[in-house]
Image (cartoon, rainbow, N blue to C red; front, side, top):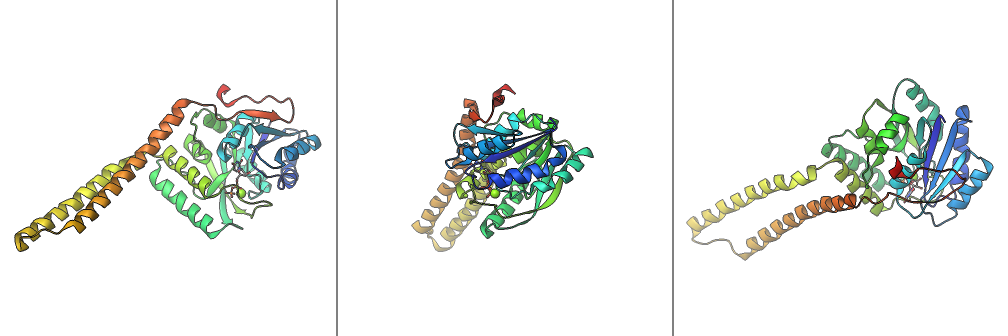
Length: 315
Ligand code: UDP
Ligand code: MG
């Protein structure tokens, strides 16, 4: 198998027929050596029926149904674990990532690159809030993280077998796949593309899911927020020093100290800071607990053929 295409699908019944047509056209030069793995991430619509129909029409298209909705990054991981190709191409089901860019990515891989990621030159059909938050997020993440995670990229990429095997050796439960590929190293390069509007349906990333992805990314790739508490303590000690000087000064000059208002302000300020740092610590401790449980990332419910994928833990 030369090429595996991996697509996580959550409630994407409307996009799938078009997705399959455009994908098969894009992989035509490598047809016969290509498998397309579509993961149904516990959809509640007709996604699974659409995958079965696609498999019936094109046997190289395989559907894999997870036992429940596990989220984009886990669904993608399930597909990556099942992929058998020497090169693995991953994209979203909604055709926001054009499959037609594949030949260009294949060319770069022929030239020796291990990871060829799509870089969003422009985003269409997305809200100003989404664009602005994504812009700020990638810059904030890079400021905190020691790994350089390419800005304005999603999980749209072509990777080599050895890059994928490296990522599959990383056992963490909360997964930020694009960051993990950046972390493994090897030779990497970006290809610019226009991010189109969704082919059908609406985004499966509400604000809550975006925030979860962002905290997974931040905590997974940086422990600097923990040091933030130490830095903050120096700042607040500095501020209380200044307040002490002020109080001493007014005692000497006016024989009176400022009253309860300033006390209340200081108390609420410092308790706010304490709770904030406690919350940051709690976030990491909670993640330690989740990692420690070592639960399997996903379970496969059904597959469109007798094809046996290995479960993630067997790899
Ligand atoms: N997705 C998934 N599980 C989820 C949410 C999303 O597999 O719980 C898939 C979705 O079907 C799509 C990809 O992840 O293929 C990206 O989601 P979406 O296009 O909604 O995100 P956006 O492009 O709006 O950031
Ligand atoms: Mg999308």
